[in-house]
Length: 182
Image 1 (spheres, rainbow, N blue to C red):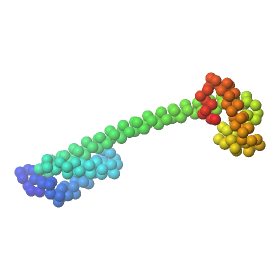
Image 2 (cartoon, rainbow, N blue to C red):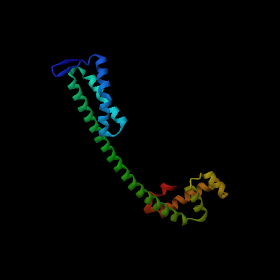
Image 3 (cartoon, rainbow, N blue to C red):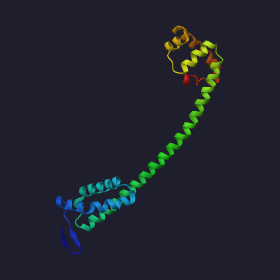
Image 4 (cartoon, helix red, strand yellow):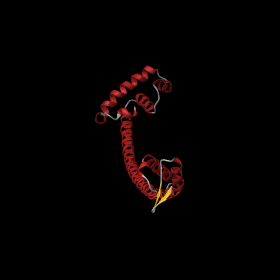
């Protein structure tokens, strides 16, 4: 770097000059960026990005005041963009969580009502058929149901087939519900 009028001439094509600029401005720029983003790691990333950009367009700069102005302006703009991006992400996350809460509540109500309607319909079945359907709703396989009720697996299949026919009639208004739990 050499003094020229009131400007300092800089040749960024030389790596040692670029290194001096980096060493001189890196920490102050990180502190500057951190005033905006309040996160050391994000601030360091922003400054790093600005130095990469400076390296890419280094031929456009001849004076130190140009470089300093470019770096501080770039850091400020990137920090503001980061804040705007975080704001959008936070708003989206908030809306998503609100919808999820509403959806969970709604789904839970539907699930409870479905279970109530289905169990009432199963209670109307003959006792052995109702027992088979309750065990099936608990997730038991046909072989396990047969073993626990002391009947053959074919009997379980037949009882389930008959139960489905009767439940379709009982639940004709709720035909789509039967497959949610059985």
